[in-house]
Each structure stands twice: as structure tokens, then as C-alpha cells.
Image (cartoon, rainbow, N blue to C red):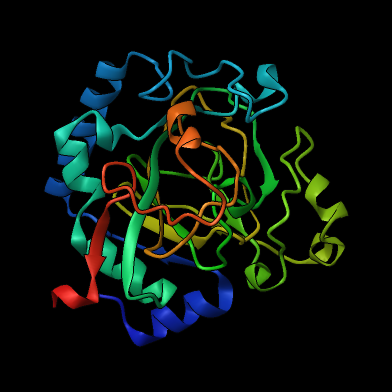
Length: 274
């Protein structure tokens, strides 16, 4: 695993809100990830959340246009909780250290993982930011996005708006079926040039949850498979938004409580361990 970040890479991430890392996984690691994730997906049998019978493509209350968004990608959440091999991937302290360096925090927790598969002829993913959908308010939380197969302009690669994380807000702007609707809220970025992230299988990106990003349509008869995970500083607190939390978890949380349940949001890296 190519997990050693240079000071230049960290600085680039801090300025731009994203980082592209080629050859993140070697061929053996990529094979392990692919086998583990495929097995975990078969075990879940389309069930989006481990605590719910909602299937991918159904309206889970997050997406208001289920028909359109059901053909953006297949999304299965928290595979790490239902498969030990995926757990070893998602809780890898080497990734945790990378997240710690990029977020500049002393310790890192998981928020959630998700398998994202754009099926053949899938719709584009509109420009959006992530953090306002989550159950905490934090300007440093980030996602790793690992390509499990080659990701191109043709099959729906991601695009990032450099520096946008410095200006976007924590208020939810929603996500639209119209790819550029978010620029009504952030009009200055309507005229900026995005950076595309074409990736070879095994390469990855990190992006801040407040970085404007999007993905194209899949204009091929093949898939575009990726594995992602959101990591957050260890000391974030609940803001009242349910997001991926179960009804039972919500019942036991008050606004301002730390999201420190080790069964749901374990610490995967701490500087104190070194």
C-alpha cells in the first residue's frame, strides 16, 4: 500500500480539498479488496443498511427522487460491520494515519463506508458536498474513494472544484437531478474549471466533505466500481441528523453527544499509538 504522504501532498490537499493518489494498492491488495467486497455485497443481497431491510435503489428518505437516484449508483453502506475481511480493509491504521495527516487531527474514527457501483448507462452524480448530510458538523471530515476497476471519463469519473472546501457551508444544499443546481448557492464556482479524476484500478482519491464534487454518467456497457469510506476526527458531536444511524441509535443520542460508540464509530488510528 502506498500510504506514505509527502509534506507537499498534504499541503496540496489542505489547499485544494482533494488529493489524487495513483497506485495506492498493489495488484495483490487490489485483488484482496475486490474479492472481499464482492463477497460482502453478495452476503448483504442488496440490503443497503445492515439495520434495515431497505434495498439499494429504494427511497431511503435521503434521496427525494428515488427513480432518478436509483440509477445513479448502487450504494451499500457499512460493509465493514458485516464482513471481517472488509473490516480489516476499512479499519487499516495506515489509512487512518493518512486521514489523520490530511485532517490534521490526533485520532480518527469511521463514520461509514460504502460500496458505490455505477451500473451500465447510469445517470451522472450532480455537483454536491457531503458533510451537510452527515450527523455531525465538522469542516475536516473526509472520504477515501478507491477505484476497484479503471475509472474514466466514459464510465463516470469524479470531478473536483479546487479550493471549494474553504467556502462551502455546513447547511445542506441538497442534491439535485440537475447536475449544476448547487451553483445557485455557490455561483462563483459556476465559472471555475474542475479537475477530473481518471483513475487506474487500485488508485484512490481523498476529498474533504465540503469540497464540491460530481461524477459523470456511465456511458459504457460495463460497471464503474469503487469502495469508499468517510473518516472523521475522534471528537465530533451529534448534530441531530439521522443520516445512516438506526432509529435505536438516534433514540439514545442527544445533540452535543460525542459520536464515540466503538461498535459504530471505532477509532482506527491515534497518534498516541506511536
